[in-house]
Amino acid sequence: MFTSFGRYILLLRLSFRKPEKFSVYWGEVMREMVSIGVGSLGIISIISVFIGAATTIQVAFQLSSPLVPASVAGSIARDSTILEFSPTISALVLAGRVGSSIASQIGTMRVTEQIDALEIMGVNAPGYLIAPKIIGGLTMFPLLVIMSICLGITGGYIACLASGDVSTADYITGLRDGFLPLTIQVAIVKSIAFGFIITSICAYQGFYTSGGALEVGQSATKGVVYSCVMVLFADLVITRLML
Image (cartoon, rainbow, N blue to C red):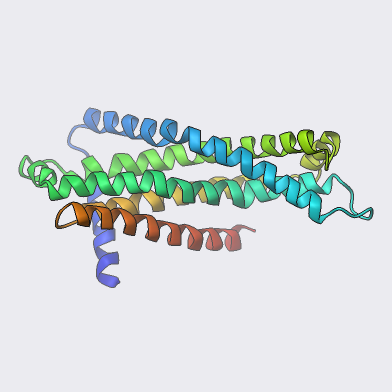
């Protein structure tokens, strides 16, 4: 474990060395931002709307009491979506989509000796292959989480409109009551941490792949599994520190 962690730290150090030619790295960063951000819009949008709708319906069902104001459903759904569902579930989904892609892409380059060719040409392979992916993840994950929060709250409104368990007026009142800007800050911090964890761990697994096609698949699987575990651990730590 300590050996792997040391290799991971050294790989990150190599990844963020000063680039030889900034324009080339800038193009790679833009390409990774499009791949991670735009490529994930569809799945994040669908998941966010349905999770927001399901959360609102379940909260309304559990709080069906004349002693509890109906607007509480909106407050609980809002805080749950902002603090937990949008950042964490989006990260777990992106670990499967983005993380496996990063690990398999870099792993394929390793087993086909393309990384060796880059190093022979004097190119800093970790910086060229890994740093743009990490920067793209750090940039696009917060934007995806913000969009997920908006769509999750919208999904709750649609659920209220369709089911009638909670009136839309009560739902909107609940969204406004007791809102703390700290919850948005926690969500942003989580998204940044999750973006770094997923991209760096999956890139590490792919970079040190050895063997053939079977090992590339195993590296992608390890990257996704380790990323999900570390995302949940980071979620607990950030929640404990900031709340």
